[in-house]
Amino acid sequence: MIVGSGAGGGMAAYVLTRAGIKTLVLEAGRDYDPMSDSAMLKWNHEAPLRAAPTPEKDFGYYDATVNGGWSVPGEPYTSAPGSVFRWWRSRMLGGRTNHWGRHSPRFGPYDFKPFSRDGLGMDWPISYADMAPWYDRTEKLVGVIGTNVGLENHPDSSPGVLLPSPKPRATELMIQAAANDLGIPCVPSRYAVLSRAIDHPHAPREACFNASPCGRGCGIGAAFQTTTSLLPMAMGTGKLRITTNATVARVLTDARGKARGVEYFDKDGVSHFIKARVVVLAASACDTAKILLNSKDGGLANSSGEVGKNLLDTTGTNIAGHIPALEGRPRYNEDGMDVAHLYIPFWLYKEQAAGKLDFPRGYHYEIGGRFNMPGAGLPLGGMEDGYGLSLKEDARRYYGAQLSYTVRGEMIPNKDSYCELDPVVKDKVGMPVLRFHWKWSQHEIRQIAHGIKTAREMIQRLGGTVTTPDLPPEKAIADGGFIIHELGTTRMGDKASNSVTDSFGKSWDIDNLVIADGSVFTSNAHKNPTLTILALSMRNSAHLAQRMKKGEL
Image (cartoon, rainbow, N blue to C red; front, side, top):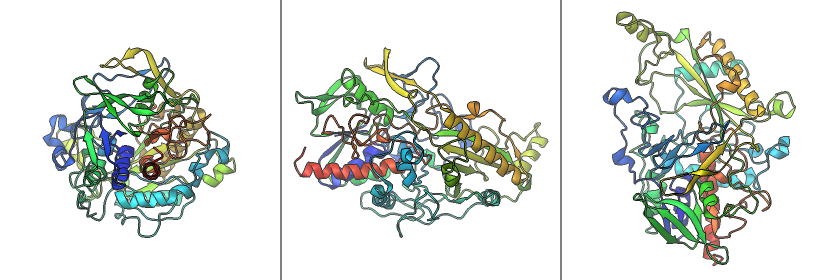
């Protein structure tokens, strides 16, 4: 039995069913089919409020999150006094894979052994060498564009694995020129979007035709999501059953302490028990922690006391600029894939190792700038003025003359960032909800300061003006949870005393309880985590299948 149908759960279902194992997936949200539910080719002006975000649709009217968001009716959460943490949940089949950014860099050798490098946090019980073949298999299966560039701690893929990269846009070439002039690399991005079709009898996927925002859901399967790939492939084996609207509350154990199944509540609040030979939790980092904490007084699989601890997110901020050289440029179709064709990976590892920087972990830039679809507000960087004719003239002049640098950086685990059960607040079925404690350390604050300073230098190198308010890094850094990369609440390790699972996601305490989502991350590299969640789930599910076939479970 698998709890969750997103990246970790979808991959686990794919691997286990292909191994001939009958599998049930329980999904808390409703059924979702991108073929019929996504609004791929709708124009913003056709939507209410020109597709602007609303409290019911946080990322815009057409966003693929049909159920969920920053708040979920009947499923509250709280933040402890002095803490701010925002928790995004996608209550739908496929989870967040339906609307994620799809940026898919690999973790590198330094990322798996951070403590050995700088003495902070904890090393993973696995190395990059352990993961390299699983990255290859995952990239080949889900489809990742990119180019091998041979940069330090940014591993190349094996030959023939990556799909061709799209050509850079004019704005991206400008960013690349400014970056290179300052000694900063700017290279083809890696994204889980197809530049070539992938044919599969149960999940045919077309190449991207460069005409729709990926976050709306992709009815042709070009942008990776489990609902058009892993789940249909698993269903095609005849070994998978999916139950939606099934919110798992807790894992139940027998007299020997083994997992015997789960209790879940349907959409009417009716309780059900499902028996299972093995329970795989892939509900996302915070939901998995919540299930374990609610399963037993003191928390199930919590002999180490680490369930809910080591909560991580990615650091984030955004720096935008107006470039006069881009004003009034000729109009042409600049859609391309709905992702940045280039990005700026971290480039200062040697300086960091030598102690020349005042922050210990890296960051990268996801860059932006192009002619894009107008929405509720004019995409003019705040340069427009007046109304009527003067507004039209400003629109023609300034449209497409803006660039952006989005910082995404590594957070180091700290004792002040964790989740626990709220002692008072309960959800709609009477289960205690999560209460979050959160604090950025000076490591992250100084990292963001460096990212802002360097982005401003690149904008100025292009003769541009920074349009983002000049905030101190403590104010510029995004709230905890806002980047939607929460990880680490059931971290893996090499011993039971300081971790929740072993290197294969198996609970130290319960050998038929496996965790297959981002909660097992020992650390959080600056690189977006979903590719690593997928690759880990593939590796760990293959190991689980072997154990089941040997009769160990």
